[in-house]
Length: 484
Picture 1 (spheres, rainbow, N blue to C red):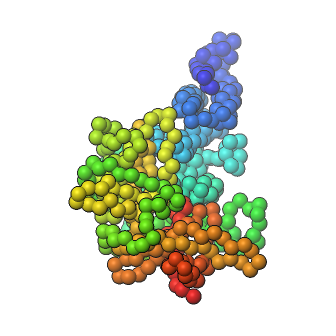
Picture 2: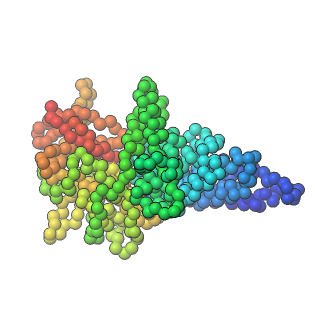
Picture 3: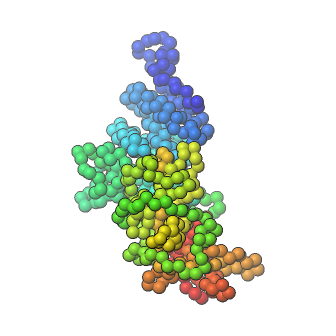
């Protein structure tokens, strides 16, 4: 086992060799020993031993925090100990999201309890030395702010590469995220999120939280917005440097996410029959299911073409789903519920089994089984979010709004003197009003080129200019265009 428990009480008796009741235990020594265990655990951090080591670390730091005297002499040591506890919670939240796990309610409750203790003892904003943080210094306020800011960004609904790029920006700006009592806000000021002891789940909009006599902390985003605006402006004035940690694009992206209202369930969820469906990912696999001709599909739900990509199918979802005998075999997905333009799919996975190759904002084809009453026509969709809780894996799938879909080919313009790029499969979408748009292959790490050649007919290539980008996913771009 990586961590060997080292009881604080036993250690104190070993060091108090004079057996004097007035002898002072060497608290600094105990903290240094636990810190050495933390450093070893962090360097050898593997999924298989994460939680066993994490529980031991948290128990050791909590035991030390309870025993350090509440006096001015030990104030700095208590601040360091509480910062280490906040660091443990930060690592737990990051691990859950990287492993696509649901955030346990006990973690939210523990985080709130820790924040209340830090504020009560007036050490929430005290920065201490921590070699395992980005700047070498941190405070409980910064680490707890990083957890809440990561939740606001919501990595379950964005490509992993985008989330990874924003993590350093989140850590850098977390100190500006203010948590204040609700009574501090002026009358009529509506905070975005509330954080309360009686709501053990993730932060919610205060109007959606059942009010009780318990106090509530709210997130005041004004200081954070100002810091992000200033940082983005400063980044634009700095010359481009390959060694720069962040770009104005990252700052602007984080600012745009912060300015969004809390994700709400904008489409009502309805029960659906427990049907088994196929979910196909990967451009080559998807294109095999779409012929090179228009195919009629059910009309989309009402909503403009430009704003439909902002719909969160099950934002803030809370489901009572559980592993039971109704689920399909492991190689298939089962429809759990539906909304006007999407479905929630579930499947079971073994504890040691790696997750299927499904990531947020990935292009996918949803294939329904053929029946006497329905044709087995594929639907072009994208994966909005995924979440794993134990052996149950859930994903939200939303279809593109189109009446007809046609498989065509496209490639970026070739620069003079360079070899021509190969043709790539592309989808031409036509909505009810006749407006057309393209779904192009575009990795998240690549820059979207504006000039393309498109083969609407097998033997004819037309030059087009990308007019507006509706949506950019992990492996696709949904755009409007105009011919040149």
